Length: 273
Image (cartoon, rainbow, N blue to C red; front, side, top):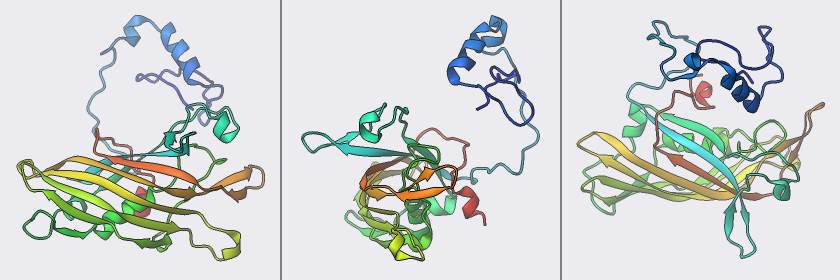
């Protein structure tokens, strides 16, 4: 982890050009507080407009739509109701690591998000299939990245892993905004050469709402959730890379239209091949 000020001053660890050691958020904050107030106050540094852009960094598609994704493990309480993962989860996973939901983004091109609109003049009750390019973006994120690192369940879905799906968009309202309901089941199962070795899977349903403002010619709301049973791989030995399939557990995934972020999705490089 690197911690430095906007002016380039390292706050913790020794920098040798490749690695910063002994750096923690708490330590970085302590070093930040030692800086003169003139370096800490807002506006202390004037960052000019950048004239050059590193071509290796992905840019959001022009006129595109960006969704924020969160993934979280869910558990049953004493009454059988689903509850969120505890922030500290020794009771759930036998470790004292702090728990944070997984975090990713979906970047849709202008052509992709426009394909979500009804193909004909919308009428209440009309339904049509979710376009394949958008469905593929959603399927990719039906996995658990919440626990981080290499020692917890994870999987990367390929197109051939989609075993079945029936996601549809339904016109719920025409005015004052066009409201679409997204719903349907999806089954994903990792394709493996040896079926006897087991496979990661997700078996669940999606439900969500998308509001399109014709005057703004833009979606003003996207709230979609997926809930299903998930199994993924986790590493049992860092030294030899041994993997084990996790026990099934409930996984919740949300897709939201929120503040725009320039952080590229984890699968953006795959889409550019």
